[in-house]
Length: 295
Image (cartoon, one colour):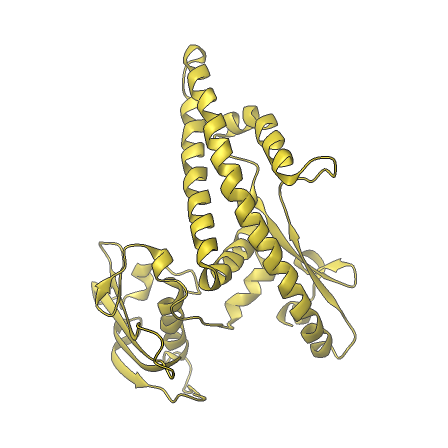
């Protein structure tokens, strides 16, 4: 599959542009601030439904207009794919609309994975430099493009997490005499949270394990065969060899209930996980040079 044609209307600095691509290698060149990166951003948005710069939809729409339109045409060499047109409508007043071959997409899970992209940009340095949330978003987006089951797991996990947090707020703001019934509901939410949380953890661990194998040789060559890198998945749920991960997760959720109620937020789980980048026993997140982070 390759991108045959990209049409933009009122997208950032483009009032209207129609770009055709070669099925092999394409080079986009021009002066500064002419919109080269904007083309790449639009392609990435057609794969992930969001800007790689984490820009809001309002920031993408041309400042003189109310809405913007992206239309991307795909060419399948083997003619196996039934999807050949991706349509995205951005509006200042309503949620973005996505259509595949003219049919509106109701769920993001049915959209992710249609077009897979790897985009390297200066913003990627934030994966190392910024906090855990950036690294989790990076990992989640990569998995969502290649694993439909993961899309379901992370969507369900985030849904249950949000509902549990709402329940924690209700408990916190309820009189002591009425708290017991609400607290009992936490058992049900914890069971569901653990179920989907374990699925998320397993998929992430397997992905990082595979990524670490591939990146090790590449980084070694880039460093002039002087440094080796290891990537580890840091699970927020503490492990105890005497208990299964599920039992550890369950016990820690239960023991942190009082703190969670006080903070009105779930403090244990994969929504707090992280990724470490270790070179010569140094964690690049804290001690890496600019060169190491770019590598």
